[in-house]
Image (cartoon, rainbow, N blue to C red):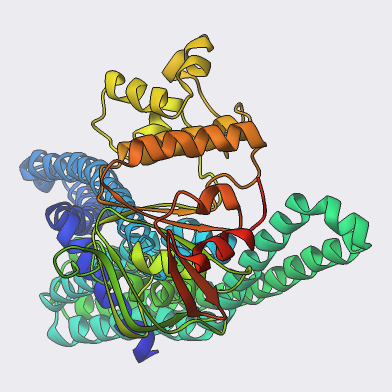
Amino acid sequence: MNASLSNLKPILALFFAERRRSLLVGAALSATTVTAGIALLGLSGWFITATAIAGLSTTTAVVFDVFAPSAGIRLLAIGRTASRYGERLTTHDATLGVLAALRERLFRGWSEARAAQDLVRRPARLLFRLTGDIDALDSLYLRVLVPAGVAIIAGVVASIALGLMHPLFGLLAGLLLLTAGLGLPLAAGRRAARHARRRAYGIEAMRVRTIDLVAGQTDLLMAGRLDAQCAAVAEADRYAANADERLNRIDAGVVFGFGLTSTILLSGSLLAVAALAGAGSITAPTAALGVLIAFAAVEPFGALRRGAMELGRTLLAARRIAPRLSTTEATQRNNPPAGGLAFSISAASAGYDTEATALDTVTLDLKAGEKLALIGTSGAGKSTRLALLAAEMQADRGTVASLEATLLTQRTELFRDTLRGNLQLAKPDAGDDELREVLTAAGLLADVSALPQGLDTPLGEGGIGLSGGQSRRLALARLFLRDTPLWLLDEPTEGLDGPTARDVMRRLVERVGDRSLVIATHIRREAEIADAIALVDHGRITEVSRRGEAAFEKALNRLRPD
């Protein structure tokens, strides 16, 4: 539990860094609402009782002031309504703003070294961090922190008010309120934590398995696993439902506990005020005031019930998210290489968490302005080397120094947006003239101009609406927008027909200028533009040859022809 609570520190720090004033104002308004409610109920009871007693005698009825109490009741009613409205508006706006900032911080964290690789390998589970886990954190402020603070204030206020009638009465009432009112939710939260976590795991498993069922139903049907996957979804649903049932039982126990506490407090208050009124220490209207204050003081503690039920889910979300918030927000970059070099890899080793070492003690340099082709079998470590140079992952040992780089991966990453929006990912302030210029360089301007909406043409997810060749050219145009001194390309023409692939390579060579270029490839047409070829085998550089050497032609001949 202590470890889980420690995970709340970076989240609370973000809460108060983003919306400190709004959060404090919202808490103050919530306390004002509860205090006004207690005062309103107590004053109303006092006024009704006092009016009834005053009406028994003509003399007291004439001199009794009904205007001041009634004005106070109206003021408290209006103030309670206004503060309740302001509290809801302020607290929810602040919470939504903080959660939006949290999503942005988390998403930026996934752009750091290694994190993007994790996102690719586990998209469904990490997407849950942006949705379910962050949504769970709205309970932290709205259903835990604010209700707890308000309940404590209500207990203290009620204790002081009752203590004015008799110190022992106020002390005992305050102790009962704070002990039972805070103890019941705390005990329930501890009991419910395990079941709340199980419910979160069950819902997450159900979502992931449902996504797998929908997205992979063809493969599942062909493999004869469709019924098994449906059964897995149902099993996750039963797991979550069982946790829900346990939580409902605990919740019912908390409701019973608060009901018992309220009964004990009211019974004790009735006996106390009766004794005090019989002894002449307080009047009958004051006795009614005391009973109603005790009755109203229990209500704020009941608001902690929902927070207690969700505390386990909130702590689980904090445990998952907090490590990512603790990382630096600075963009990962490699150190610049020595003068005249595009990059320098010295005795570097790197790998992924779930895989064997992909690079093993690699040393390799490239002069600025030169082009290098990395060749080798699939899984030899070519893409890993590009990820190191792009600073998308870091070396476990050794050093990697490179100029600022742009990576064009094997996959054409296009999004559900317009053509303009997909291009401006590389350069947000690029104007239409610049966009048309890079489209021309990529050989796509004629196709875009033929579309009715031109650059404003919307694309579906993954670039739906464009052919494979057009999608690759659009990605190439986006690369052209990135004016970095080092371009990294991972099989840039894989899957394209011969004429399209050769045209893409020709345009790439025309555009590269004096930039440095590294291409990971299996195809001759991509490697033959290089000044040097490095053969990669099991994570090691086994041979480096330069243009004009016999080994260079031998390396080209090993590659797949156009």
